[in-house]
Image 1 (tube, each protein chain N blue to C red):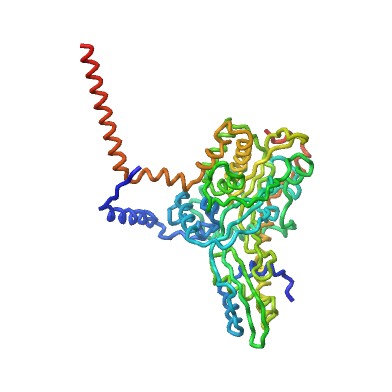
Image 2 (image 1 turned 60 degrees about the vertical axis):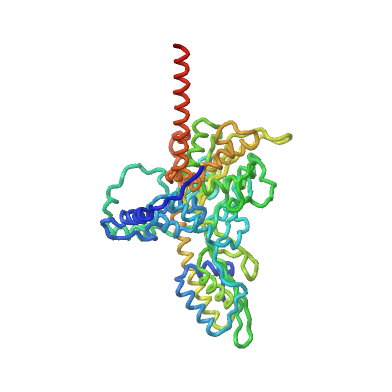
Length: 156
Length: 373
C-alpha cells in the first residue's frame, strides 16, 4: 500500500537525488515496454494567480516546466499510464517520474520499490516543511504580553 | 533617429569582454562564486532578479547575477532573453495564495489575526549597523548556523496554511465585493499594452517591474502626490504550491512550489454605488521571491491606478500609462543604455543645424546693426 495521494508523487520524487530517480525508472524500462504518449518536453508555464483583494486572475510570471506522459506495458500484457508535470527544466527527469508514476498507479511488478522511493521523497519534503514551521514558531509574536503592561500601542 | 554601421571595433569589443572577465577573475580568494552560494547567501538579490526577469528560475537567476557581476538589470535582461528561447507549454489554472506555505506573515491592521503573526526572516527590527564579524567569517561557524537553529527548536505544531485577514473584513461587510469579471487575464508577454488596459495587465506589469522604479512611483503617492494612505492588512512570504492537471487523470497534481511575496493593503474608504454602503478600498501586490518593498509598492500603486482608472488621474501615480510604461527595468535600462551607442549621424546633423541656426542669427544680428547705423 501507499498512503500518499498520487497528486504528491511527482514532488516527492523530485525531492530525491535525480540520479536515483532516473536509475529506478531505467530499471523498469528494462523489464517493460515504455511508449511516450507525447514526447517529453521542457519549456515554460505561465503562472496564473488569484489576486487577494478582488479575486481577479492575473499572470504573476513564468516558470520552467517539464512534462511527460507514457504508457507502460509488461511482457504479460499489463498496461498502465503514467505522467508528470514538474517545475523544472529537465524533460528526462519528468519522463523518469512519469514512468514511476505509471508503475505505482498500475501496481506493475516491482511497484513497491517505486512506492518506497515516493515515501522517502515525501519524508524529505516533510523535513523541509518542518523547517519552515520552525521559522514560523520561533518568530511568532506574543501579543498577550502587551496587555500586561500599561502602555500605548506603537501605532502612529 | 539613424545609426551608422561601424567597422574596426571588433578587436576593442573582444578586448572589452576580456577585461570585464579579467576584473571578475582578479579576486584574490581564487574561488569562483558557486551558484548555490548566490542563491542562498544572496537570496534577496536572487529574488529580485527572478521577479524582474519574470521567470521563476532561482538557479539561472544566480547564474545571471554571477555572469553580470551583480548587475540586477542585466541579470533580469538575461533571464528574459533565456525565456524567449523556450516554448510555452502551459498556463496554470488559477492558483490561490491562501494555500501559501508561509515563512512570514504579519499585519499592521490587527494585533490578533487568525493563526497569529509570525515575523519570519526580516531586517525590520535589526539595527543597521555593520557586523564586522562577517568580514572574516569562520567556515566552520558558518556551516553550523543552520544546524544550531534547527537543533534548538521543539517540534512546531502549526497549520500548513493560514486564512487571509481580508476574508474576515469582507465577511463583516467592510470591503467591496469580489470582482465579477471572469475574463482571461492579460498576457503581457504576448500582447502590447494599449491603453486603457485591464487591471490584470497592470498587475502582471508591476509584478515584473524593477523594484526601484515601482518604489519611486509609490513613494511619490505616499509623500503627497496622491492619497492612498494604506494600512497593510497582511504581508506574507511563502511558497505557493503550483497545481496543474495530471497528464493521465486530469486531477490537480502538485508540480512544485514557488516563493512569493504578497501584500494586501486597505486604503481610505469611499462611498459605494447607489444602495451600497461605503467600504474600504483595496490594493494588491505580489511578486516572485522575497521582496517586500516591491509587493507593498505594487499594492499602493494598484490602489492608485484603480482610482485613476475610475475618476481620471490627478497625479502621476494614478495614471496607468505613466506608471506602467515606466516601471519595467529591462525597457528603461535598454533605453538609457542605448545612448551609449554611436549616434554619429544624428549628432552630426544636430551640429549642422546648430551651425546653420547660429549663422542665421549672426546674419540677422549684423543686418539689424546695419539698420541702426
